[in-house]
Length: 169
Image 1 (tube, rainbow, N blue to C red):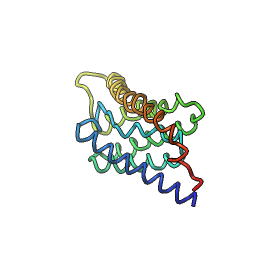
Image 2: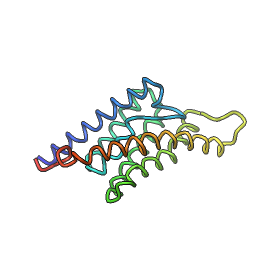
Image 3: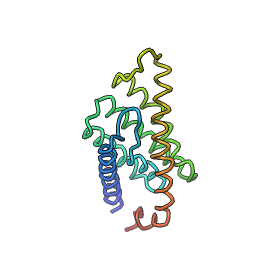
Image 4: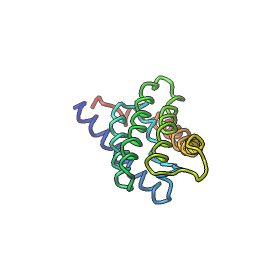
């Protein structure tokens, strides 16, 4: 029964991630230099359940495919989310650290995808400058998504975590 609950939780998290990414995509917020993916708020869920790790990874892969991302973005963007989810899980003893791993992993990886995958280079600027610029823009979006929205979600879910994420059923 625990394996079934784990799979159902992971599948639900993946599905919610996809839906939230589509909502952000409808507003032009899901891809490229400035990304405020509402779905990234879910990266705090490993604080509550390890089922969120594969759920977030699968949700990100599916979202990136369905929103028309290129292969390097599908692969490395999803890996950034996976690394962030793993980091959140390992830091789960410290609630206020939950959004830090996804913010850091995306700030490091996504600018490289933007530069080398999409070829988004600012004319006349060095690669280092472009990387720094995209790290700031992606970081700002991640702070909004994970740091603000994610922590609001975490604090809200804390009240119901025993019922929502229980595997004792």
